[in-house]
Image (cartoon, rainbow over all chains, first blue to last red; front, side):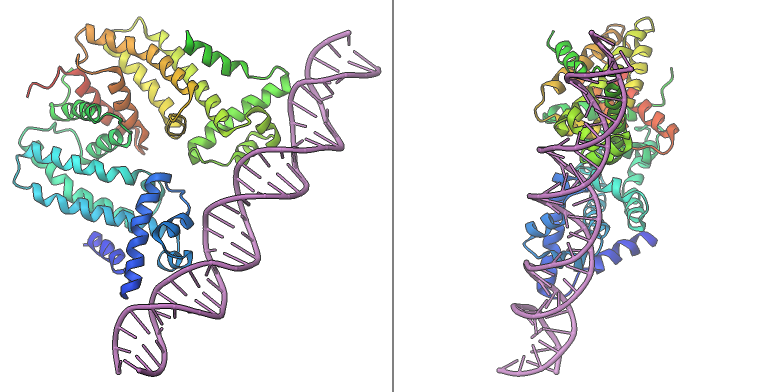
Length: 193
Length: 193
DNA sequence: AACGTAGCGGAGGGGTGCCTCCGTTTGCAA
DNA sequence: TTGCAAACGGAGGCACCCCTCCGCTACGTT
């Protein structure tokens, strides 16, 4: 499967020597932080600084800015994709909603990166495939059970939810209220009107 | 009213001499473009370049980056706020939906700016007030007519819609489909479940 | 038509980030 | 323990951006 290959390939770039791997991981963690705070244009030197390594080390591991994006991105996708498996035994609608809740955590960091990567990246496409492979069955199951409207595609749902969550909510209560409204729209059958 | 004062004040900064006003307007138009493309961190020199004026002219009109943000922002709010009046004679639900459609155009540019301005800006607060004054009656009217669920606040609706629209949709058809799902959630009475 | 001044533009100094290159350090295999 | 290849780090050259300053331009008034 193409997607697994791509993700595995990125993962395999991880260096083998102990100190090198430590630095590599520190860089990804720092990048996750800094990209989250400053967006995709964040300073690479700041990332190296925060990871406690020299700028040269950053460039050896990630020769291009995009390489760092991809590594961070893949890291998050792995976690998200893995979490879909736990939900198989829940009722269809609940499983979908629960997974979407995990999805939003991932969207938080993603926003800035995605805009950068979306243009043309094999890795981005693979990640997309990976996520869709994890989430789409949940939607289909909910639709077959009559819990979700049949005219929504999984892509629609992703955009619906991620858009809402990209906004900062100062009150968690409001975030849940807004998500509820959106999910009510998803739950009901196609608008009769 | 505080909000009108604030917006008027920004508007009054517009210079009087013909050539100066031309430049001022060109700068705002260019800024709208460039901020839209590059986000809030866009290069001011690029903006001046694209407006066809010297960098000095930019700085005379907008001494601080924030001043330019505010001017762009106010410009959009004026247009949006004005457009609410046209909708008074439409049926409640249709009026709300129509206004929200105009709202999304405004959100496009806003995204990056808002994050910058939200921190502490009198102007930002005024604009918020202005928009809410324009849109909230539309929601209330729809609620009173039984077309919109009563437990949604206007703030909820704003976040719901702006979040969705902040995403880039390559296909307009999909954008409409997603918006329909969300608005269906808004239309139906509170989830019985 | 003539003039005073508001407005113009862009050179230039200071700062920051990008990326390369190479002398030094260090993990690990023998 | 020793040796060497892999990995490190940061100095430095280049590019771009921010913002100020001042000699020049041209608008609008009289």
